[in-house]
Amino acid sequence: MTDPTALSSLSSALADVVARTAPSVISVHSHRSRATGFVWKSGLIVTADEALADEGEVGIGLADGRTVAATITGRDHTTDIALLRADTGIAPVKLATTVPALGTLSVVVATNRDTPSATLGMVSLSGKSWRSLRGGDIDARIELDVRLRPSQEGGLALDAAGDAFGMAVLGPRRVLVIPTATIERVAAQLETRGRIARGYLGLGLQPVRLDDGLGAMVMNVDKTGPSAAAGIRQGDVIVAVNDQKLSGVRALLRTLGPASVGTVVDVAVRRGGEPIGFKVMIGERPEA
Image (cartoon, rainbow, N blue to C red):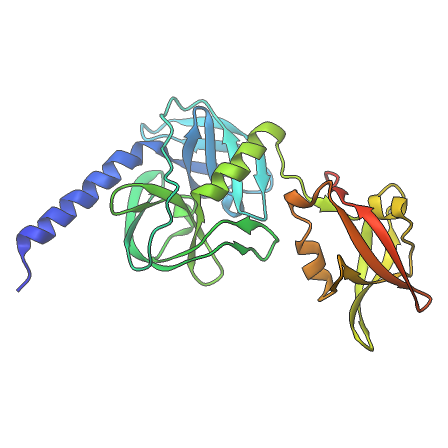
């Protein structure tokens, strides 16, 4: 028989966890859409980039019914993190660096129609770092067995102790958590630079199948880019980078993360069927 005292204690503990965190969670308004965000630092709010409209004004809905204007400090599509600046007067939340274990309870504290909300579930996957489909480096793979409304995207994922271990976002078929380590790394760069540096070869590439594997044909070359400076030309076929055979154009582009900027890579190409090698210093992708 279930002990009613134990259930009552669990219920009270969860309610207390939510009550401690809810004041730092706010509603984000952008172009007829609603999402959730949380105060990362004084005057700075983290929210889910995918839930933020590409145009129009941005506002922050507060618990007292007021809406204050916000500006976009920076956004990174690859990690689904956007940073807003707004004067809310709300204290920042303390993010925990731990990654929750598989099967542990988790509460997502968010907003729904500008009202605080909470959803209970469990950690259904807890694994190593991974790379998003857009090429972003995520420090841990965390999935939650929980249902979220679109307006709750960007809410805080808490463990049973009330520690916030990341931001809940809507994946293609499941709820994912962008962990604290990723938020701290990306938000810090957005705060100082307004963008995330990405590697740049200055090439337009087309995949081609060769007799001995895959290659990437150079369709166009940025005349001011790093590959042009190294001597790569239109019509060259890239077959390897740093002695690793090319597995595809997308795989090559995924290697051009923030850490790649300024590094020198050995690029093996075929020009008119003859092998030739180049040393290319990866540049920083220009702003669109």
